[in-house]
Image 1 (cartoon, rainbow, N blue to C red):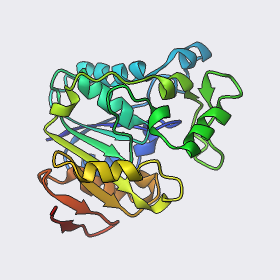
Image 2 (image 1 turned 90 degrees about the vertical axis):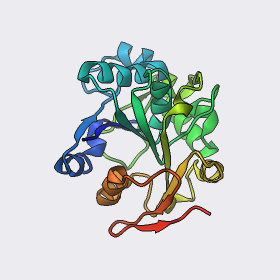
Image 3 (image 1 turned 120 degrees about the vertical axis):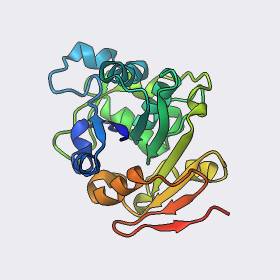
Length: 242
């Protein structure tokens, strides 16, 4: 049995994995989907204002402690790529697999702000004008989204190198929003790195909603990290890394 810890991206809660969780559980695995501090419905303004990247990494580590998890597959969507990298760095070897689901893969000293593109810097800056400490969600998305703590976008990550020792590290590139994605250059970098397994998923950014079966199939896949997968919402074909 695998233990999955699913961490949502900006503005979202555990509900963002609602279509994937039952697929993993039906396969016999334990699943923990998180809502990060500052994104919970009962969080007050002070909680939102003080939450940062360290807070969110600690959320993950506390879950590992509370649930006595010693061998986790840690999955982060979008912004949460920052979170799972920071959490893996301080998890004392309790992470066996990292999956960055169309998510940032930071280097030491980077922040979500520095790692993203101009489109999302504008989204962050414009969205913070209401309070100065939280970023309102972009228009047109799920009404359950909540203002996201600004400090978590701005705080730089400090990595000791422990996260780079996780045995299996994977990046999923969602190719269906190439007009706005901040991850194209990251995909090219990781695809050239033999220590990373890169997957291509032909969906928009919210792959968990657009193609939950394909996301679940990827997470359930035992394929060694020396192979790359071309995924579709349905049958999965394998492409050997050259």
